[in-house]
Image (cartoon, rainbow, N blue to C red):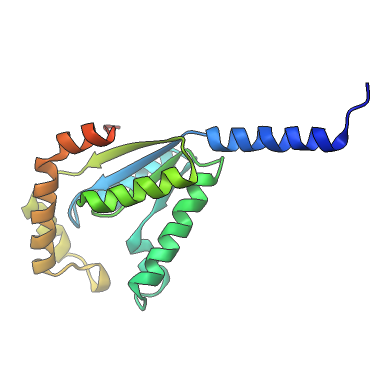
Length: 179
Protein backbone atom coordinates (compact mmCIF):
# COMPACT_ATOMS: atom_id res chain seq x y z
CA UNK A 1 0.00 0.00 0.00
CA UNK A 2 1.42 3.31 -1.09
CA UNK A 3 1.27 6.28 1.30
CA UNK A 4 0.30 9.59 -0.19
CA UNK A 5 3.01 12.06 0.94
CA UNK A 6 0.50 14.90 1.06
CA UNK A 7 -1.87 12.99 3.38
CA UNK A 8 1.08 11.91 5.52
CA UNK A 9 2.23 15.52 5.79
CA UNK A 10 -1.27 16.72 6.77
CA UNK A 11 -1.52 14.04 9.45
CA UNK A 12 1.93 14.98 10.72
CA UNK A 13 0.98 18.67 10.87
CA UNK A 14 -2.27 17.86 12.70
CA UNK A 15 -0.42 15.69 15.24
CA UNK A 16 2.22 18.36 15.75
CA UNK A 17 -0.48 21.02 16.18
CA UNK A 18 -2.42 18.80 18.60
CA UNK A 19 0.66 18.11 20.74
CA UNK A 20 1.65 21.76 20.60
CA UNK A 21 -1.70 22.96 21.90
CA UNK A 22 -1.91 20.20 24.50
CA UNK A 23 1.31 21.06 26.28
CA UNK A 24 0.14 22.17 29.73
CA UNK A 25 1.28 25.60 30.82
CA UNK A 26 1.41 26.64 34.47
CA UNK A 27 1.03 30.42 34.63
CA UNK A 28 1.94 31.76 38.07
CA UNK A 29 1.04 35.33 39.07
CA UNK A 30 3.37 36.72 41.73
CA UNK A 31 1.23 38.94 43.97
CA UNK A 32 2.86 41.39 46.35
CA UNK A 33 3.88 44.99 46.82
CA UNK A 34 7.32 46.21 45.71
CA UNK A 35 10.24 44.83 47.77
CA UNK A 36 8.17 41.91 49.07
CA UNK A 37 10.58 39.35 47.58
CA UNK A 38 8.83 38.43 44.32
CA UNK A 39 11.83 38.82 42.01
CA UNK A 40 14.25 37.18 44.44
CA UNK A 41 11.94 34.18 44.83
CA UNK A 42 11.23 33.78 41.10
CA UNK A 43 14.93 33.93 40.20
CA UNK A 44 15.50 31.03 42.61
CA UNK A 45 12.64 29.12 40.93
CA UNK A 46 14.20 29.57 37.50
CA UNK A 47 17.27 27.71 38.77
CA UNK A 48 15.12 24.88 40.16
CA UNK A 49 12.74 24.64 37.19
CA UNK A 50 14.80 24.82 33.98
CA UNK A 51 11.65 24.71 31.85
CA UNK A 52 10.40 28.02 33.22
CA UNK A 53 10.38 31.65 32.08
CA UNK A 54 9.73 35.03 33.69
CA UNK A 55 7.67 37.83 32.14
CA UNK A 56 8.20 41.10 34.01
CA UNK A 57 7.37 44.72 33.30
CA UNK A 58 10.42 45.76 35.34
CA UNK A 59 12.76 43.58 33.26
CA UNK A 60 11.32 44.99 30.05
CA UNK A 61 11.73 48.55 31.33
CA UNK A 62 15.39 47.75 32.08
CA UNK A 63 15.79 46.51 28.49
CA UNK A 64 14.63 49.95 27.32
CA UNK A 65 17.11 51.53 29.79
CA UNK A 66 14.07 53.16 31.45
CA UNK A 67 13.40 55.30 28.37
CA UNK A 68 10.14 53.85 27.12
CA UNK A 69 6.47 54.27 26.49
CA UNK A 70 4.06 52.05 28.42
CA UNK A 71 2.63 51.00 25.05
CA UNK A 72 6.02 49.67 23.93
CA UNK A 73 6.51 47.86 27.24
CA UNK A 74 3.02 46.36 26.99
CA UNK A 75 3.60 45.17 23.43
CA UNK A 76 6.87 43.47 24.35
CA UNK A 77 5.29 41.96 27.48
CA UNK A 78 2.51 40.43 25.36
CA UNK A 79 4.99 39.24 22.74
CA UNK A 80 7.12 37.48 25.37
CA UNK A 81 4.05 35.98 27.04
CA UNK A 82 2.71 34.67 23.72
CA UNK A 83 6.10 33.18 22.83
CA UNK A 84 6.30 31.31 26.14
CA UNK A 85 2.67 30.12 26.08
CA UNK A 86 3.22 28.64 22.61
CA UNK A 87 6.67 27.18 23.30
CA UNK A 88 6.55 23.42 23.96
CA UNK A 89 9.71 23.59 26.06
CA UNK A 90 8.22 26.04 28.58
CA UNK A 91 6.10 24.56 31.35
CA UNK A 92 6.07 27.34 33.96
CA UNK A 93 5.52 31.03 33.19
CA UNK A 94 5.97 33.39 36.11
CA UNK A 95 4.31 36.81 35.85
CA UNK A 96 6.61 38.93 38.04
CA UNK A 97 4.57 42.06 38.68
CA UNK A 98 2.55 43.42 41.58
CA UNK A 99 -0.58 41.61 40.23
CA UNK A 100 -3.08 43.10 42.66
CA UNK A 101 -5.85 44.08 40.27
CA UNK A 102 -8.38 41.53 39.06
CA UNK A 103 -8.80 43.31 35.72
CA UNK A 104 -5.07 43.04 35.00
CA UNK A 105 -4.95 39.35 35.91
CA UNK A 106 -8.12 38.67 33.88
CA UNK A 107 -6.53 40.29 30.82
CA UNK A 108 -3.47 38.06 31.10
CA UNK A 109 -5.61 34.94 31.65
CA UNK A 110 -7.70 35.75 28.58
CA UNK A 111 -4.59 36.48 26.51
CA UNK A 112 -2.97 33.17 27.52
CA UNK A 113 -6.12 31.20 26.77
CA UNK A 114 -6.43 32.87 23.37
CA UNK A 115 -2.97 31.48 22.54
CA UNK A 116 -3.26 28.08 24.21
CA UNK A 117 -6.39 26.66 25.83
CA UNK A 118 -4.34 24.32 27.98
CA UNK A 119 -3.22 26.73 30.69
CA UNK A 120 -3.53 26.36 34.43
CA UNK A 121 -3.35 29.50 36.57
CA UNK A 122 -1.88 30.06 40.02
CA UNK A 123 -1.31 32.96 42.39
CA UNK A 124 1.74 33.08 44.66
CA UNK A 125 1.08 35.57 47.47
CA UNK A 126 3.96 37.46 49.08
CA UNK A 127 2.68 38.73 52.42
CA UNK A 128 5.89 40.36 53.57
CA UNK A 129 5.14 42.93 56.31
CA UNK A 130 4.79 46.46 54.96
CA UNK A 131 7.50 47.84 57.28
CA UNK A 132 9.98 45.27 55.94
CA UNK A 133 9.10 46.22 52.34
CA UNK A 134 9.69 49.89 53.17
CA UNK A 135 13.11 49.03 54.66
CA UNK A 136 14.08 47.01 51.60
CA UNK A 137 12.79 49.69 49.25
CA UNK A 138 14.86 52.34 51.04
CA UNK A 139 17.99 50.29 50.21
CA UNK A 140 17.18 50.42 46.50
CA UNK A 141 18.87 52.87 44.17
CA UNK A 142 17.86 54.65 40.99
CA UNK A 143 14.90 53.30 39.03
CA UNK A 144 14.43 50.38 41.41
CA UNK A 145 13.40 52.69 44.26
CA UNK A 146 9.61 53.12 44.49
CA UNK A 147 8.36 56.46 45.92
CA UNK A 148 6.55 56.12 49.26
CA UNK A 149 3.24 57.45 47.88
CA UNK A 150 3.33 54.72 45.21
CA UNK A 151 4.14 52.11 47.84
CA UNK A 152 1.16 53.27 49.91
CA UNK A 153 -1.19 53.11 46.91
CA UNK A 154 0.06 49.63 45.99
CA UNK A 155 -0.32 48.48 49.61
CA UNK A 156 -3.94 49.66 49.58
CA UNK A 157 -4.59 47.84 46.26
CA UNK A 158 -2.86 44.72 47.63
CA UNK A 159 -4.96 44.74 50.82
CA UNK A 160 -8.18 45.07 48.80
CA UNK A 161 -7.14 42.27 46.46
CA UNK A 162 -6.16 39.92 49.32
CA UNK A 163 -9.44 40.63 51.13
CA UNK A 164 -11.34 39.26 48.11
CA UNK A 165 -8.77 36.65 47.02
CA UNK A 166 -10.73 33.54 48.00
CA UNK A 167 -13.83 34.66 46.10
CA UNK A 168 -11.74 35.64 43.09
CA UNK A 169 -9.76 32.39 42.83
CA UNK A 170 -12.92 30.31 43.24
CA UNK A 171 -14.69 32.31 40.55
CA UNK A 172 -11.76 32.06 38.11
CA UNK A 173 -10.64 28.54 39.07
CA UNK A 174 -7.17 29.76 40.04
CA UNK A 175 -5.09 27.82 42.51
CA UNK A 176 -2.77 29.10 45.23
CA UNK A 177 0.85 28.31 44.36
CA UNK A 178 2.45 27.16 47.58
CA UNK A 179 5.74 25.69 46.39
